[in-house]
Length: 191
Image (cartoon, helix red, strand yellow):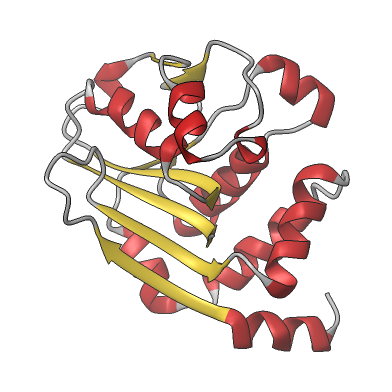
């Protein structure tokens, strides 16, 4: 990444930690680095849809420069990526959240698992739906596996973008069945 783009990223970064005040929520806090606009929007779209999987390293390296944010992530036990369907993974060639989660886990030395949460159906892409339809579309598409791995653990659930929260809420609802100590959502950007 060129110096100009690095400076743009730096100026747009927020590194927010928002406590979830809704007592009915399945996750306790939302951590995100950017608002979904400007250069990060272009980077994420290229990363997801233009076969630029290598951009995950740029994103993770940027995240790692914030010591406070990293120390918060290190207080968790395990990081889990939001899964995508087998069909979508075959089309894209990779799961963008998986690449990010695996790299973060390696760099900050926490456990990584993609074995606990699986997507059982291929659905309409959430980005093509409105808020209400997103909630309906995502219901019942994730399944918990190996719950014993998550029991009494502090979990980070990683997704690339938080728009309405439908995806991470549904995933957190499923993960909650494993009786973890807590769940935090980490996203690169919030729309």
